[in-house]
Amino acid sequence: MKEKPVIIYRGSVAYKNWTFGLAATDRGLCRVLQPHEPLQALENWAARNFPASLLVPDDHRLTPYAAQFEEYFTGSRKNFDLPLDLHGTVFQLSVWKALLQIPYGTTQNYSGIAAVIGRPRAIRAVGAANGANPLPVVVPCHRVIGKNGLLNGYRGGLEVKKELLSLEGITGIRK
Image (cartoon, rainbow, N blue to C red; front, side, top):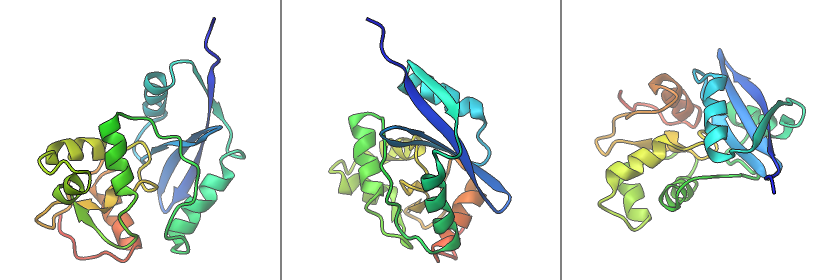
């Protein structure tokens, strides 16, 4: 019997001169594209995570998701309250769950996340899971910095990471 296709609705939300792509299934938000990521990145991700999926443009269906992003960008929202449809390995999911516990306006380092998940030596693996986060901004991987206080890599680019931290009142972090 053929598997029923999963419909992934896609849309976007703008902030300054950036556009973040949004994608959701009927279960919740499943992917956020960083401003420089092309639609092809969503297509490739969907093919890996939902082999029998259809991508359907539908800004209207994504309005509640976009509204929360807009509230975050204007400073009126500190926490996202969205249904999430996260897909990853058990390790990745544990890291992403730990990221969700980092309060708005604060940062954590990679070794701190490794300690939180009970894997204190898995610092590099935490970094890899952080980089594979399919829901940047919502699952706040931008709040993770180097132990030395420096901005480390960010799939969206350091300029985007610095801007997101600045929105939350975190300034003075060096590149």
